[in-house]
Amino acid sequence: MKRQDNWFEHALRRTGWQPQRQMIALATLGFFISLILGALYLSQVVSDATTHRHLTALIEERDELERSNEQLRVDIARFKSVPRLQERAISLGFTVAESGQIEYLVVPGYIPQRVDTVAPIVTEEQDRPLYDETFTGWLQQQWDAVFGGD
Image (cartoon, rainbow, N blue to C red; front, side, top):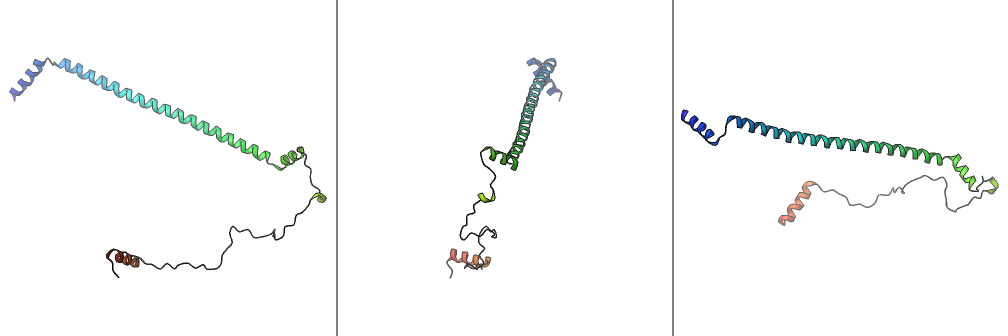
C-alpha cells in the first residue's frame, strides 16, 4: 500500500502537477462552467421576456380589434334602423306610398299561408333491403370464402 502511494506521488512530482496548480485549474474550470451556465440562463430569460412582450402586444392588438368590431356592429345597427332607412329613402326621392298607389299582383297557385317545411315528408315505406345478417352468419361466409365450403 505504501509503495503505491509513493508511485502516485512520484508521478505527480515528475509531471509538475502541484496541488496549487490543481486548485487554480479547478477554480478556472469552475469559473468557465459558471460563466457558460450563466450565459445560457440569461439567454433563456431574454427569450422568455421577448416572447412575453410579443404575446402582450398581440393580446392588446386583439382587444383593440374586438373593440373596433363592436364599434362597427353599432354603426351597422344604427344605419339599419328604420328611421335612418326612411330618411335615406326620402333623400333618394322615394315617398311613402298611399293606399291608392299600391298595386297587388295575383299569382295563380300561390298559397300565402302555408306550413313551412324544408322537404316534403314521405309517409310511404320505400322498398329497402332487409338487413338480418348476424356475426356468426358473416363469419360463416368468410370461412366459406377462404376454404371453399358449400
